[in-house]
Amino acid sequence: MKAGAALAVGLAVALAAAGGYWLGRQPAGGTPVAKAPAAGAKPARALLYYRNPMGLPDTSPTPKKDPMGMDYIPVYEGDAPSPGDAAPGTVRIDAAKVQQLGVRTEVAAVRSLERPLRAAGRVEVDERRSYAIAPKFEGYVERLHVSVTGQPVSRGQPLFEVYSPELVSAQREYAIAAQGVEALKEAGGDALGGMRQLAEASLARLRNWDIPDEQVRALAKSGAARRTLTFRSPVAGVVTEKKAVQGMRFMPGETLYQVADLSAVWVLADLPEQEAGALRPGASAKVRVDAYPERVFEGRVSYVYPTLNAETRTVPVRVELANPGLLLKPAMFARVELSAGEGARGLTVPGSAVIDSGIRQIVLLARGEGRFEPREVRLGARGEGYVEVREGLKAGDEVVVAANFLIDAESNLKAALAGFAAPGAASAPPSAPRAVGHRAVGRVEGVDAGDGTVSLSHGPVASLGWPAMTMDFKLASPALGATLKPGATVAIEFVERQPGEWVITSAVPASGAHAGH
Image (cartoon, rainbow, N blue to C red; front, top):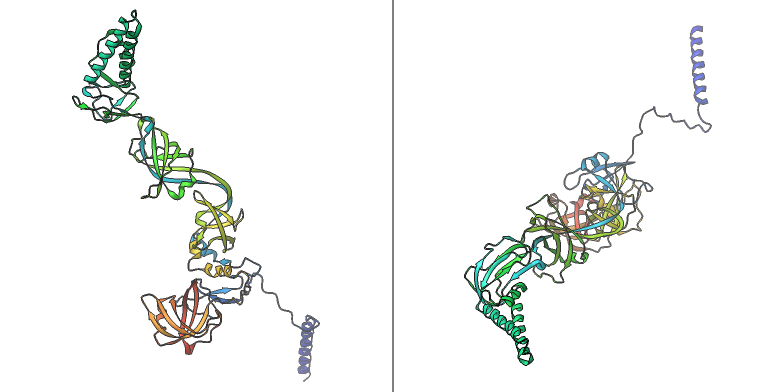
């Protein structure tokens, strides 16, 4: 008994000591102190909600599937931006997904925009360097010195000789008149004056026919008329046209030869009418032809024609350039790049950074850690690969230039852009996201499977202030047709995909649905 009593007393003392130690560790109010988590342990993140996998503005507090059978994606605390963490509408994408999409960014910077204008053109002979050889009297081609088209000729080179009875007669008249003036020099009086007038008239006739001065002087000296007259090339160039045939008869003014100087040529480019106002004479031009793909011929715009081709809606532009080695042949097709000049300096981003909906232009700002903020911008001039941003960005902003359409597609961005429609609306906290879909209960009147539409007579929609009505809806997925049968009463959820287009995203029999907004 004594041994048992001693054991009981010892146990009581031990418990009392342990209890006293535990009580001594508590705060005065008696609330237990939580033990610190083990080093390295991560606290579990709280689940906020589930979001639509296609980026539609729809969330759920419980797991569910979309009309196409895809699971809604859980959003945890820290995944969604907090009110002070980012601008309203910021989209967040997992870093691994960003890498898979191939997202690339570039910094908005101030630069000068160059506006190269590209047009198709053709090589033409410089009209000021083209010469026609056409006798001013009637005659016959006696002999050809240049007998083929395309033959190069030098300045003063004989081309052909002609015989003309009129020319021979005119030479004899002048020779006789010149000799008469010499004979009547001592006599003087009216006879000498009349003979001089006759000689001057005969000489003017010969000069009007382009008889060379040396031949006229030889005629006056010797008094012997030459039977033929030689026509020579007025310029160094190439014979571009030859109509003369030996022995043929020609009439006054008939072109027998055409000679062109091809050391410099024109390129006539056809510029679209909307670009014509950007170009001025003196602008630099680069010309390329398929025959010499490695060569670039440089020239200047000498003239912008004041006329428009009504069929092609283009304005002709004349470019003058040198033709070394006569490489450029008339009638060759050419690719012309015209410089509209260096524009004023401004803030620019690559053209690929802009998402243009036709109504507004958006760029995506990279905010780091997989966050992307949609920003509406106002654009200005466009240049080679870049576009001017007049409002919405500042220098140094990092914008998405590749895969931005993937971020936008189907898209988280659609929900973000809803903020632009109501900029004064207060956003809901991440833990209780604002629903932007609408709900209604109604009766299916008809289904058009081919068009993907359904006619529904629904009750009032409080979220839109709609009264009861019958209207057509689009289906987000053909699978919804299994529920939407003519005559069925259903509860639907729908969104406005674009102005005036309402899309049903889910539909269940009315008996299994709760009331809408």
